[in-house]
Image 1 (cartoon, rainbow, N blue to C red):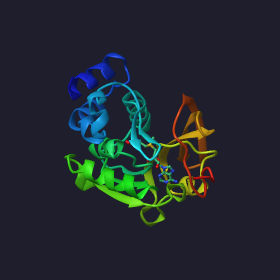
Image 2: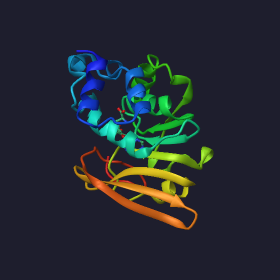
Image 3: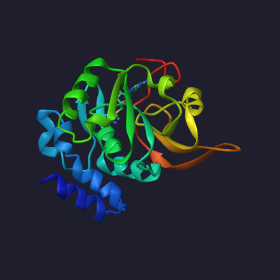
Length: 211
Ligand code: SAM
């Protein structure tokens, strides 16, 4: 199998409907983000372990979230949960600049190495820290994507969302959550629920409090 086969499956299953998202997936080969021992499964639609009890998400939910985020080429994006760096590279293929935050130092290093294989790496700023606090230095963001599950929407992330901006965030328990679409408009904050998802927990000041 090759990356093109994965993209074809995602199109056939209607997880990818947008041409720009198709091209982003074609430009970022998932195999570079998978630890050696699982690389033979890189093109399956499955989450895979990346160490430290964390995972790279299944391509179908990655594609779904990117479609829902509706990224424009001028968008400034904040990602919480760098993990393998795969989603950060896809975001960079779609937007102008990506700030991505990871709390586990070894995973940040893993992602930085993986991103060396990414044509869009110059558009990615990799940060270490508690993403539940956002990254106020570069706020506001046009798009915010949280790739771990929070107990509630962290207030700093809402504050750092631009007017006209959109945030995707799984909210709920430590295993299962609902995917929220949060928008800031001129007249306030709006929230929709997309459906059920399963992410590893967001751990931090505005997340789950255990490590
Ligand atoms: N987006 C990733 C990818 O493309 O591989 C997958 C992310 S993985 C499902 C969730 C990540 O969120 C883990 O790497 C975890 O360490 C990280 N995480 C959890 N709490 C965090 C926090 N408060 N700040 C930053 N990262 C956090």
